[in-house]
Length: 465
Image 1 (cartoon, rainbow, N blue to C red):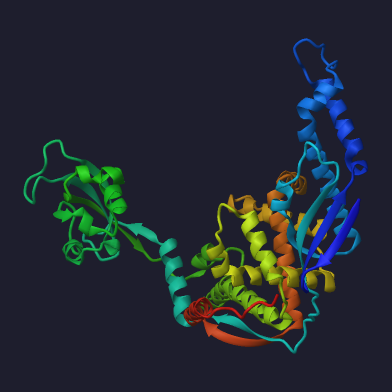
Image 2: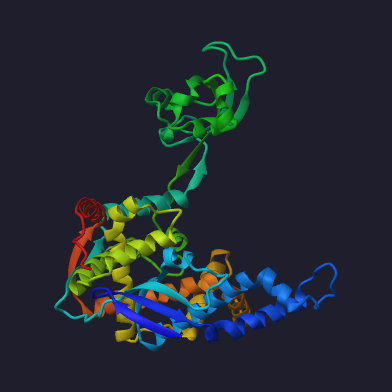
């Protein structure tokens, strides 16, 4: 066997593997003998078919299969022994491979095109500055959360007259026209939420109504979608066209949520176990909790900013021609040359970031220990059980649940990825210079939206080969 590497520019190479009969003859003969023991043919006892006949029937396919195995092992070992950091997978020269004569050839030559990862010299330091947004929770937002909890834990009453946020219950009856009900028409009882109605005239008619009142409405105009209209009168969406859009609604009862009082009972229901005694503390705890929830989105934005900053800082060249060919070769059904050319910079930055991420994991010796995975799984199991009201669960039962979850490889991989992500984020916050920016959530959403639009409108810088 002879293996030759020819560099094609800075980050591409062609590896040529030349095989002689000595390199594969033993494997081919061994496989043919295995087949001889298994093959069945009329006129011969099992395992007694002549080897020459087996070779005549299967020799070509066995030769091709065994040669490919030898090639794969040789290529893998060569890359490993020479410390080559390749991108994607080696690409065989399909045209050259197609010209092989498996009947008469004894020596073979195959070419493999490879892309090489660039060297990375990147260190995280305070020389790299990144905006870090902290979400400010204003009084108005806290007010809305307080009102939401008041409604959620409020008391249902049945007033005698409807108001704009009440829920009405009654009977929908299909009409022939505005004054006549349809014989054998659709009849259905359901709720009607005044505040979700699209028809403003109908809203005004319903406000102030009392049980026993009748209203004729066009159900398609009353709500936003046909799906809502169909559900309201108890039919399937696809069958809605069979019915008249006119229905008479007879109001039977009115439901209203009387907001809960702002007191210690509400505090405990809304934020159990916090020991909150005053409205001031309640609002402060709410603000802190909401800020943590929104900070998740801010941290995602921070990660994106770090990615862009480090990609620009590292300025990694890539083997563009190879990567384009590799993308097409491995995604024949999904990608075209035009799509690859158009979206290549997005692909390229994904490659760059993966290289940078792996470099940082090695450089800063980030790792996730099995004990950390188990701890994360235990925390996940406990949080799931709490949702079902099981707050005090014995440790042996938790351990059993963890074992069950740990048998799911996909779930375990998610945990590993999540923990690595946390460690990377901690590393960024520790090593980079963070320019803290306090911002309201609405302004943050606008900022992220504008940033996304700018990124989409501006092409990324060109890639060096």
